[in-house]
Amino acid sequence: MAADLEELARRAGAALRENGGTVCAAESCTGGLVLSTLTDCAGSSAYVEGGLVTYSNEAKMKMLGVREATLIAQGAVSEATAAEMARGARAVFDTDFALSVTGIAGPGGGTAEKPVGLTYIGLAGRDGLLRVERHVWAGDRMGNKAASVAAALRLLLEALKA
Image (tube, rainbow, N blue to C red; front, side, top):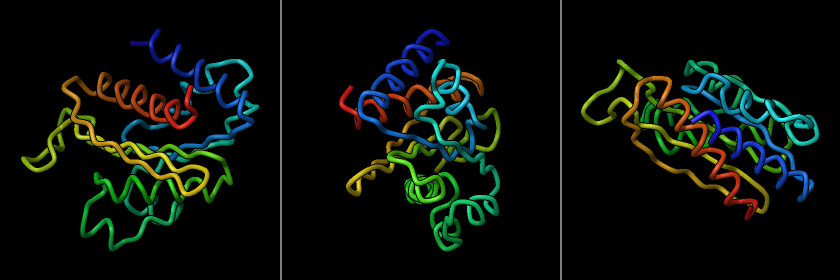
């Protein structure tokens, strides 16, 4: 998986440089792994602005502007929260694109309605672009985190048409 992540990050970086775009991230269950993967590429300072690891609900509200009403009604692991995280990060960092990841990496924390591996990945971008994908990974904690990073980078590449 590491080689796959490296290749996805390299392609995303090349596409961002080609388009003159910038990116940031708001991460929960991935704990900064999206940005770590992006910044493993030399020259990433040309397109990575920064990011926030907002693990708690309080951090999501305070740092990203996620609404308490969203967290109460939908939960931290939801399409609505991923969307608000992406929009909030884009506003904080003033970037062309913002990725967000919120999920249940495991091994505990799942329920029947929200099983371990459930992850929402958001992308906010230029011209009002907003996409959120729902995934349910079947790996262990590290596998689920890596799968989420790969999916986030693929989502960014789709937006960049790369």
